[in-house]
Length: 507
Image 1 (cartoon, helix red, strand yellow):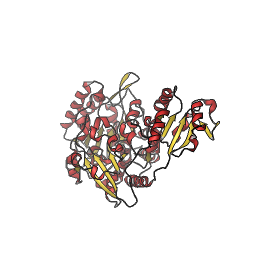
Image 2 (spheres, one colour; image 1 turned 45 degrees about the vertical axis):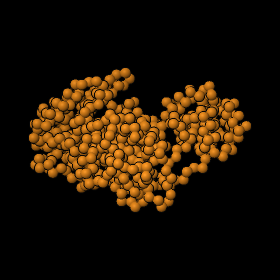
Image 3 (cartoon, helix red, strand yellow; image 1 turned 90 degrees about the vertical axis):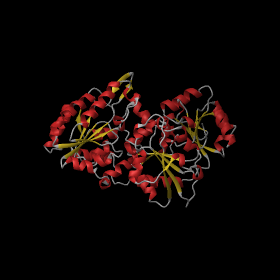
Image 4 (cartoon, rainbow, N blue to C red; image 1 turned 180 degrees about the vertical axis):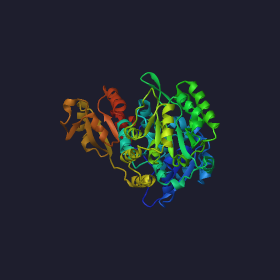
């Protein structure tokens, strides 16, 4: 549904900021925990933690959600018992960006947005992959497009949003709250059961993504390591009883892999079960089934992992890290993540894993300084205050005053546009101001048009606008196609001339 202006619940100076944190999974609580704590401790905020127990398709993440909150001692109310209408939030925080897969009709982000709440999304993982499907997952989904603010971890990732996200002007760089815990390890003690079972042995954290295949250019590719390599290592893991292994498996590995993740290859499901079963038999392997990965990850003397949203955190711990990839397919990664990945030890096979273990036995870590430098250069918010920064940015955003006039871009400088500029005096409109006039024709660029310099389409990306009005009837659809599918602009802000005029008359 198109609107010329998005309306949010008004906030006045001195009024409590009503903030609602919608909780679905303890597995990704790290992405908003320090924001929540910072808001709780700030007298300007009134905070509610709301448990959403219903979902549509995805279920693996949500196992044990209520128990997680109770174990953490966090006060919450269930969504079906929360009286939101009585005191509707100024701001709502949503854990997952995939509306259709995680949120029932009543909890879709558009429901909150259209009722006046400012949707805030903080990525629950890290935008690691740069494949075509990953760009859609990261930057082109409903929650992202409905967000008032999107908080990303570093400037390099912000540039990816700028290229592919239709809501790019909502993005702010404050660092990820996930990183805050690395600098507060004492808040995440190692499980007592692990301490006792390890019996003083050095701990190797083994972080596993679920097996995943993607369709790329018409071909099915497996982007995670071959499970047979992991099975081979599991069959030989008894050689390393002088170490204690803590398996941190993605919830889907311990629960249920979604059919679309494996592209119909059921052998991956069987091998996953076989791998978990083989490791469960070992005295020196502990399978961590808790929802919070930090209690184990932060205390590893070494880490073995494949593609993961915690790759930066793993490097931040200071422990040597082996990064496992598929031997037949090299997944493209976003620049900051690739830079960190390049600073880690690399592996593709069981043999590489065994070499890493021998290196640990020898006490060698030749890449320690390289890792630290890569982290500092690519993920610079290493002060433990990312959650605090996000909270302050939200409070500052609420203080911004609503613009009196709409900011409008006119696209197309033909005779129709000339008519509206001359006869209808659009340059003197009281309801909107023209911030830019653009045209596809290169020969028109930089020339004067009623006091405006005609801009190339690419300059639109720099403008924070309320509406683009396409000032041509016969070329409307081809221009809209370019704006939406080539330049990644928000379709809801692109207007037909007639509908813009009608909507303007009603405002």
